[in-house]
Image (cartoon, rainbow, N blue to C red; front, side, top):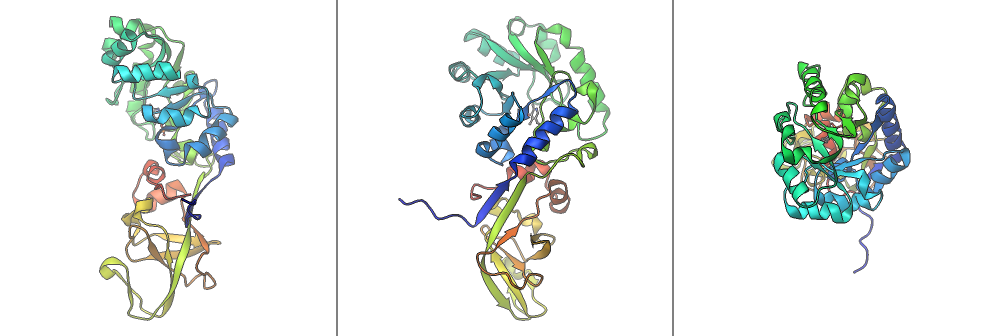
Length: 345
Ligand SMILES: *Cc1c(COP(=O)(O)O)cnc(C)c1O
């Protein structure tokens, strides 16, 4: 089978912006060193493009969620720099960790037993300080199976770092009060937003994800973090509508005058959700090209009035400044990154 011709959708990754964001977050982390959350295929932007840029910028610790995410990351960084947040749920997971050389994050007494019973070795330990997702209850730190762990990084995760919430100080205090309960080499609490909470939250290692990829969870980061992901899509067909013509499923747009429109290769299967209908637009050289009618699975229709010279095959930009796109779509900045579909080149 010959290779498919180039697609009509592409995602440009600004790897210098990515590297700069890592350096910014590392600098803001003070004496702590920034790692990098690279789970979910680098938040949807692609391990192949992002992990080498983060590594070359200086990152030495990479967090994935699933065991299935290890192999792609391990092609670019030493396995001992990879931490698997979901931890070992079965003996198979523990065996895989040892054979590859990656470190599990232990999240419960059960996981501690699985890790120790299958041979132990260096690991990280997640404590729950109030988010009540994964993480061992502080009362269980005294358990024998936990005490015998060879803990590299003792960590916890903030629930409300993107807001001014008393939860932040409460979790920080709860985390601090656990430090003497278990031997460890390093401490880690802050995600992207946590880095902006200040030096009390930095400890030895920070774990930014969202802001590496251009997300701005707190105002302090606004002027410092650069956009990384630039989706682009091509016009497949230009059409001339006459007044009274309507567009798309359910005919929700009707032209009130003659107009030139473009049928564009971008749809909800690519992560351009139907919630954009009504306020979405693409751009070309700074000109706004409003979305007309509903978003289909594989295409949208846009108004070309502001760019009369555009033709089939011309490329358009999908505005993807995460804070702004989040405002206008109602999606979180995290979702805007991770929903970008597999048809982007
Ligand atoms: C995803 C994740 C991070 C990164 O969080 P961001 O908000 O994206 O910066 C850090 N730590 C843990 C445990 C995570 O699951």
